[in-house]
Length: 101
Image 1 (tube, rainbow, N blue to C red):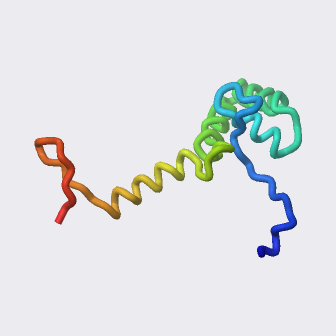
Image 2 (image 1 turned 180 degrees about the horizontal axis):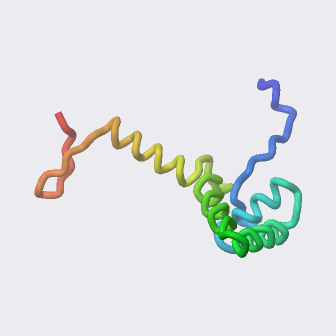
């Protein structure tokens, strides 16, 4: 039994409930304990003054895992790349993939 088994650990996740685009604002709002609309307003203001709101949203979309998954989009891409490097294949002209020797 883990020493943390009695604790309810909050995880920063993109949520399904309250989602408008990707669930970033609703996930941040749920994690912080504020209304998701306040997060949306803050990102809109950041977008108007320098465009950082769009960049922050995109970063959140890429780095925050969905509540139904354990890994983020970036982590999935890194894992696929590592799998490709550990299991290299060669595609010949017929379209068949064959392991490299």
